[in-house]
Image (cartoon, rainbow, N blue to C red; front, side, top):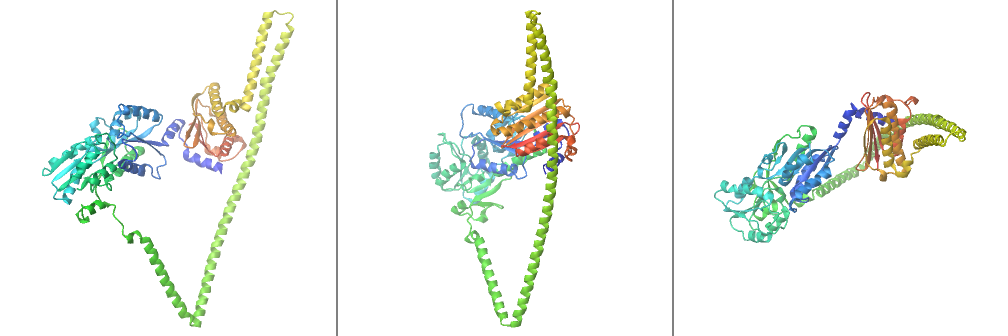
Length: 638
């Protein structure tokens, strides 16, 4: 079964060449970054996140990784705070490559307009939540794509006048924050659109003073609520909390342009939806992922606003459904008892109908029981039905048995195949053991035997010259003897390391792999690309030894067969898995032909590596093609 799996993966994941292998790996996961201007938990922020999650975290988006940061600009106003944030983001995400970066609200948009090329080079920059209705061109930078809020103050004010035609005065509540300053021109423009109304703009005061001021409002007045998240004392409020505090004392209707205010005091208006903004921004990001929108390409969208109203506020001010604009939505509508318990009602109705049916059946049976002939006929029909049901059951049982027999045949065939594989593996293991013994014997004979014989002859020459040769000559010969002994010791150490790496037992897998790969690069003369993370703490001694042998066998195969000029070894951890990749730019081979049959000629290398990975409960994949190099991928859970 493991062989079949390797063949299938080889068909699907073949790379055209070694150079494109690195590029393909980089596209396997698309990273998207979201930067919020404000803190998590705000109604608007969470609505935008809902829209982003709906698109980017859909079930079919398995290759997307989403990163998110919050600038918390509402509560942090320290000098140089954004410069420190720039350095923090650059250090934190400098090693990642992002496909797209989404900026939410004006502070984040301005931040990325200034620094996106430094922090996220090459990433497409997308924005949403842009207040004031102006495009990103105000920053003087091209290449921004995104969604602009169309804040329809005129339509909201008009619907307020339609519902309250006697209105003569409009009180605008708006602070001096970044968003408040962007909204201020939109509110003041309404003095020209509605010249017959008196507009009063509340200056930045404390929340207590603002509550007392709106408490005194009465008569033909309505309130337009913009943004009030910070008062003159520096006290911070969420949008919904500020709305509740203002509405709790206000006796006149309040209108606004954002749907997160509904349910916290305002009656309604022509609403901007944070979720719709998030969805459109996420769709633009997906266009970048699919290649339909290129980084640096400018594109601006606008969401369609909708009329929305709060049922509780409509009831308080006696506003009927018929007075609302067409296609308006109403939130917080109460449900009737029948609607609330409709499932229970349907259940009760079903039981009543069933009981009625039972009464009818029983009445018929009682009537028929009075007639013997009819009773006998009914009994015969019942027997026939029983026989029919029994026949159906036997037929179903027969099908089940037939399926079980077929499954058993498949299992037996798989067992025979496994037995054949195990037999071949056993033969290969014996062959490899014998070859290893012959190799060790040859090295002992050729290296150590000849070196010791030469050492013996040198010692004999020194002994003969003790009486006749001068001391300087004897010292030179002794020095030569010492050099020969060091050479013999080094050969013994090399043989010992090949048989059992002491460095692995003493210092662990990290040091052992570093020494193994560096030594291979040094002695083979190949150009090396080495990126090894520390994995000592994730595995026990036996697992470390298996990982070491996998890398060692990969390098041995490369040295014997690849004819490569460069190679790479990479180890990294993603989530709860360790990924090991050994690549070369050698001549490669046909994976299908190698794994399509089990034969002694193909050797033990790849099979032994696959078996070790199976023991580690991991996955093993070989990707190669003649003339395009080889890549061995190992994934091990931790």
